[in-house]
Image (cartoon, rainbow, N blue to C red; front, side, top):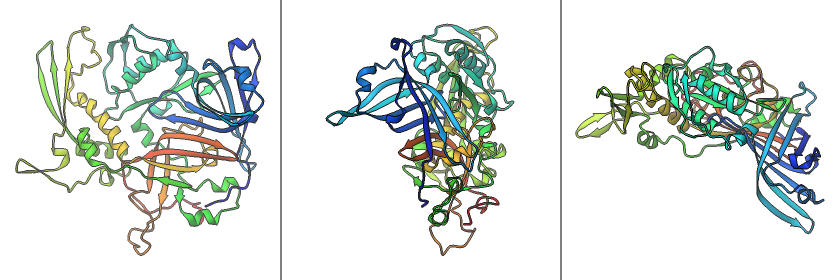
Length: 470
């Protein structure tokens, strides 16, 4: 693969502050050995870990107590691209590990977290809210955590659920947001997410993104004209070139515990039964959840890229014999889910669990099923950090991160098989970035991504007009 020739990044700020320091600041950038920052589509905050060496007794002087703040700035050094940097203030949470490597030298592993997530643990809410689920989530975060909200990843869509009235039972603001996001879906059942990236802080003020899967999967990949490719020959071809030309390389791929259809059936993600009882009206209804119909709708909305015929979630030919009857997996009821509602509790306003529309009530299952389907095909991919620093994400306002989509191609292992081109159609395609770890160590910046997709590659194109010559 490509050989690294030069420094890929520089940490220009790493300043520790605390109220008890009386205005004094401690700059530790010269001592940092490793920095990792973690983003997750299902977490409305960023976490990280810093590894640094202390051979001058700095930490003994600071006396880290888990109440300090650290301001980090990381910049590119590649001259062939426009300068790019991110700056973020974190709270230090704890010292995970402290190791004495020499008589006067110690190595510290420190956990860090977004400031609003740190404050969140000290706040518990017990009050009533009325409105749409995502609007309530936005109000909770703005009022209690003093963050800004970016709704560009949701487009103009409004969640399918009618306005509700809720009472938060002494839970934190972010717990409230997670609870609300679990209920919010688009019309076809795609889940909503509240999440944060490294690029969502300005002048120390955190920003949270609210988006939905339907919008994300219909966005253009940030590398649509220059696909990533896992290929040793490509790596050898551009070895020694500038970092900017190495942005098409997939360095490593880890495929671990995927294609677990049995787990899908256990979770009711392929076939299930929903029973709802209204304690006020005594009405009861039963509805069957069918993953085939869900995938049909996802295909029509292009969440399954290229249409429903390209789905890679389950084997449509498989049949299970149940009590002498042959059934496909979506025809089975592998899980029974019971819910309780109480119409009229808040007059004409629905409560959190109420949904008078039976089709929309099924979104309670559809959203969780989609998350299970995404987890089934999750793989880990490592790419050069320059791949992110050269591009813009779907919104165009920040660098790519979780919630964006990326084209990754894989070649066939069987070189004798020339049918359907040279690409592995099962692995190649448009992936959603679900988790992301920016890893800075020594001279190297790598991005380790957990990516997933619901469809096979529909064509054999290998990266647009510029594919590295492979």
